[in-house]
Length: 75
Image (cartoon, rainbow, N blue to C red; front, side):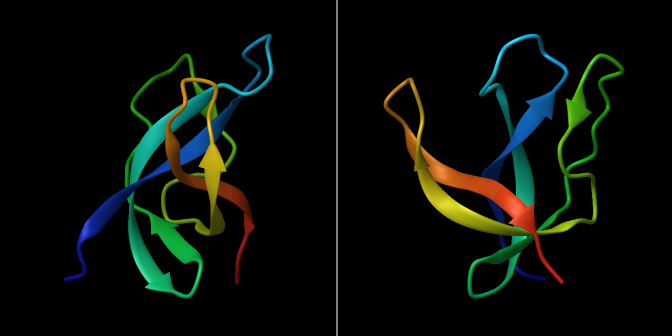
C-alpha cells in the first residue's frame, strides 16, 4: 500500500474564504491524489469527499506554511 500524505481541502460554507482542512491522501500519479480521510464532522463540508481524485499543487497559506492543496477534480 502506498504511503499516506497530508493534503489540504477547502471547507465550504464557512462564512469566510480560504478555510482549509488537512486530510490524508494517497499519491496516485503526477499531481493526482486520492483522498482517504473520512469527514467525521457534521459541521464541515469538504470541497472534495473521501475517495475523490484531485489535482494538487503546492500552495502558500496565510500561516506561512507551504503544503499541497486540492485545486480541482481529476479523472
